[in-house]
Amino acid sequence: MRTNFHTHSTWCDGANTPAEMAAAAREKGFSALGFSSHLAIPFDDGCAIATTEKARAYVADVRRVAAAHAGAMLVLCGAEADYVPGVAVPDRTRHAALGLDYLIGSVHYVKAPDGALVPVDHTPEKLRAGIAAHFGGDAEAYVRAYFAQERDMAAQFDFDVVGHPDLVRKFNAKHPLFDENAAWYREEVERTADALAASGKIVEVNTGAISRGWLDDAYPSPAFRAALRARGARFVLSSDAHAAEALDCAFDRFGNAEAYCAPVWALGGEA
Image (cartoon, rainbow, N blue to C red; front, side, top):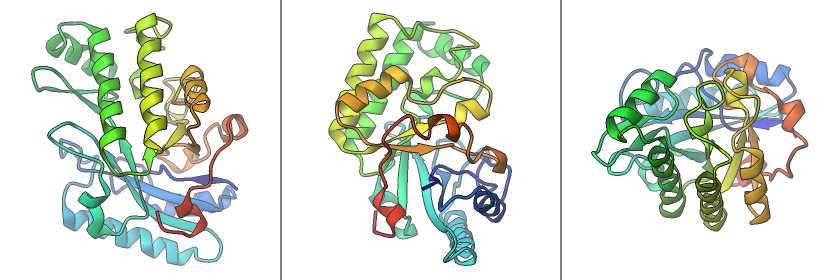
């Protein structure tokens, strides 16, 4: 069953409308497509749904697309909600009025000790500047804070899928900031694998960094996936597509790399 539940559109920072994304997915032979626009990230810069009115219009648009493909391809409406301590939480109760099919929880901003929010995946330049200004130039402290935020998110809130759990790696291949083989980093991965597996949430294998040219690998890394697998975590494959051509990015490579689960919402049940 070819599916993708991490999909962005022109409702947030995607290049194509939901109708265009669904048409492309159907051409590619998908049996199910889920939309997951960004909700309530800290800054209203056009890349997220920032108002209740816009969120309701987004849901209505996706439901219209779902009706157009009924019987041929399942189209679902979810969201990707950020966790920023004291600012935003990915919790089902927070968005219950929207009637979403599922919720992805992600960390895109790390809260520094001084309260500043450092963007994880905006640009390498902004990341370096943020680490210099708010972590005293200590990349290890920044990475540890990122993973601590991931663990807190998984343990505290009611959502379905953990989004790109080591997004902190995004720029590290082309703009190295830390050693992924260092003992402290491996320790953070193991601790985070413990927390994600204990939460019972599904972890996505996300190919988005491949389509955007930053990595030749998925999130989480092979070592992280192995640690999660050893703890009994469940996986779902996603492309984090921001354009129609990326909907099945590297699916031929990663489609058989794990034993993926069939989320209840993909089978027509309730999330």
